Image 1: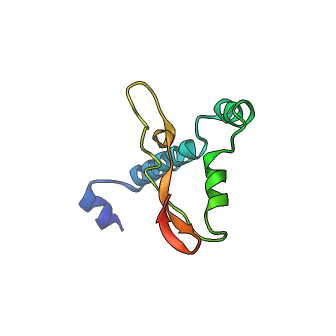
Image 2: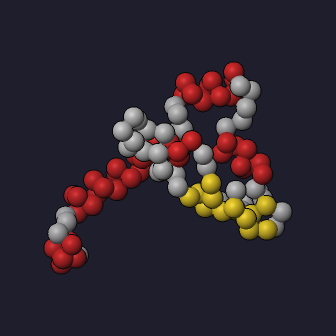
Image 3: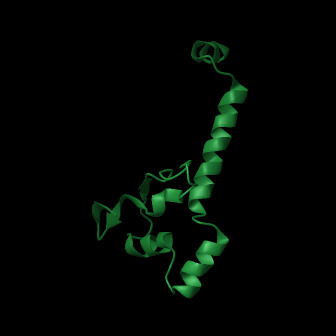
Length: 99
């Protein structure tokens, strides 16, 4: 494995750091706009969070491949997790579709 690290000019520590960064970003996107934004969306606007809506729409027990989750991060004016929208591929009524 050290040959692979040397070939790509990286180290295990660098790879682990990058993996941690991606995991943190993934969680940031899952958290949406944070607790305050989620409360405002669900209480004030009386709306379900989008991932909950999707889980009700998609066939139970089937996977959903979410695409573009990290779009909207590192913008010069701040982060907009998932670019404010969610898209992916899942099954509705037994038909594989984009949602």
